[in-house]
Image 1: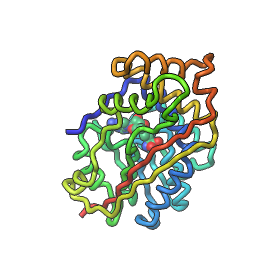
Image 2: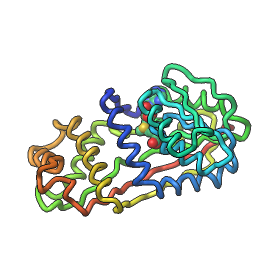
Image 3: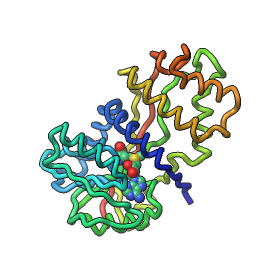
Image 4: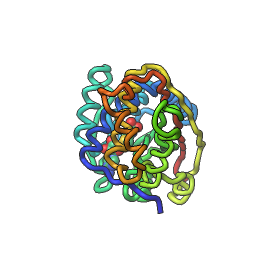
Length: 274
Ligand SMILES: C[S@@+](CC[C@H](N)C(=O)[O-])C[C@H]1O[C@@H](n2cnc3c(N)ncnc32)[C@H](O)[C@@H]1O
């Protein structure tokens, strides 16, 4: 069974900023994913973004499919509040609406949906089989489900930081992997078992070195999360390295670096009920 990781209120609080940063830093990368989905799904008019967060997917979908309305569903009032603000700022509020629902507890009334989108959210739901069943019932004839997951959490740092022991970031990730961060199955078998036919799957890589200021913020948020959760999983010298990287006063702090490269990949599945 796949390990699911829990989130405290504070995690989701920080997560909103992380998601907004990702939306800016990985904009081109996400565009490629929307482009791939467009080839498969054609011209959907009703789209639902499940676990929408602050709306990186919602707004990308609204732009990719200019005739569609997009409903963003999330359990978090904070996320949806920010999403609504962004919708107004981007003049997309006539086509974007929000529904607050804890999908583990209730399935909202959504009407018939042409495209159901779940980006890095499916692995958070407690009972994915139940969610797949609800999605199937909500899809219009010919409707498509697209799932997006991070293959691994993003990396930012060079192997040799110029201090500490080389390979610091990989050791941090070994610890997060052990703690079950981002754990998700290869959804193909679950989709098959839930009565879907897979239309395609694809992995999209990114390596983003532009905008060192935002990259430093993104790196710091990622390291701070490690610091909060993995203190026991790291050896003393790596913990010291982590603290130096996170210290805004230190010359070794991430804010002083200009060699950050955010890199990683997303895997995408598209499927249709049989
Ligand atoms: C990692 S974020 C992804 C956000 C967005 N899809 C993106 O790619 O930017 C996961 C989101 O799923 C939401 N979520 C987690 N469990 C949920 C549940 N049971 N019901 C509804 N939303 C949930 C969280 O509030 C969070 O906004």
